[in-house]
Length: 117
Image (tube, rainbow, N blue to C red):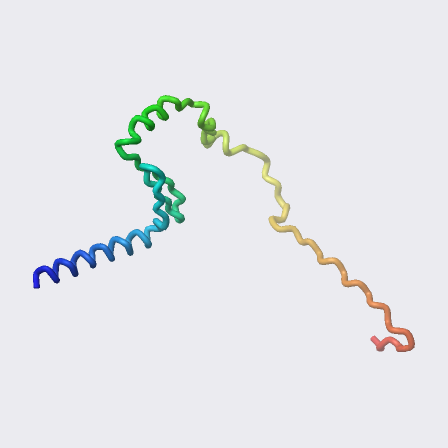
């Protein structure tokens, strides 16, 4: 009896975990060598977890990183630079009226008199 209850509890925990992973958007687990790659579609996150056998390779890779590998940071403009004063133009419509082009006149068919207007 206790064993059946324990198996049911383990199944429920595994099911809840799988539902959580599905709802969180984790849809792909890939295995490459000794590293595990996890991707989520909704956040587009790529995370690599290395095992102890890859520790030496990751240390060598970290030593070869330089600032040239990253793009320069574009600083956020300050409020003074973002707001420029200019004269207010009164009478200028926000959405100007643009008339539609007139419909082309269709010539009357030959032999038929035009309808009276």
